[in-house]
Amino acid sequence: MSLKYGVIGSGAIGGYYGGMLARSGEEVHFLFHSDYDYVKKHGLKIDSVNGNFKLPSVLAYNKSSDMPKCDVVFVCLKSTNNKLLKELLPPLLHQDTVVILIQNGFGLEADLQKDFPNLNIAGGLAFICSNKTGDGHITHLDYGKLNIGSYSCTDTNILEKVHSDFRQADIETHIVELYSARWMKLVWNIPFNGMTVVLNTTTDKLMTNINTDLLINQMMLEVIQAANRAGCSISESYADEMMDMTRKMTPYSPSMKLDFDSHRQLEIDYIYSRPIEEAAKNGYDMKYVSMLEKQLRFIEAQYLK
Image (cartoon, rainbow, N blue to C red; front, side, top):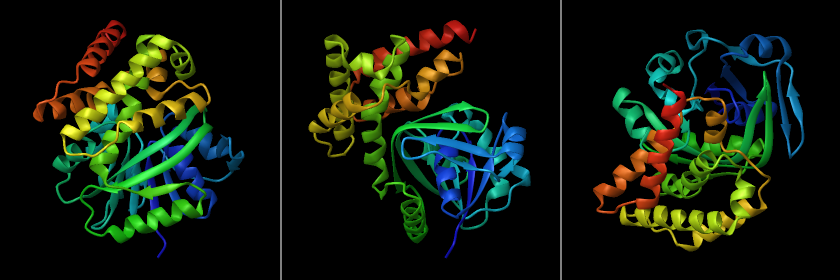
């Protein structure tokens, strides 16, 4: 069984994972925005720590209404643009299409299910350092693992096939329990996305300062405690694992820092507000995270006036 893939949001994440699948021979249809004309003419270039490559011919579109119906659709938009999915998704959907949200945050799948009650939905957790550095140009700096978990898929065999296709494309992929996986991804995303913005810095500088190193660890433990109060079982040693991983990581500006640098809307709702609300439902107050959320709201308000 071969799958027809679609990618909505062909930037740092969608361009990389979709590009890897296309390089390995899979049929991948990409929705582009500002660089559609460039990609249509010049192709897609990916500079990667694992080896550079170029796709000279790409199945590229600038309107989802021109795209074919797909078996699997990867949504790799910033979550601030999820309101567009009501219009973008329907042309790509058939009765059994699986939509995988490769996005950061909590509550993404639940919100999409409200808009598409019968849709098969899964979540994707990308552990990767990747940036879009130009038109049709993705720079993959470090890591690259992708975890996938079902939210409402009626046929998990499709996720097994997606898992197999990614493995064939040299992407480390695992099928996971989604609820816990979302919380585990937040253990890294919450401190590093927000603090690189608030302190206007990069991951390496946060890790080499004793004060920010301690604060990040405390915030990670708070996320773990909130997750466990919600029914997960995450060891506090996971915070140490994430700290060690980041110390070894290539110096990096997370996606929220790049959005801040470009004065774009920040993904505060799904990365901060929704986890805080979920924790509160379970009687847990995320004090550090709530403080960071309010700081980010203030910073964003200064340039989105």
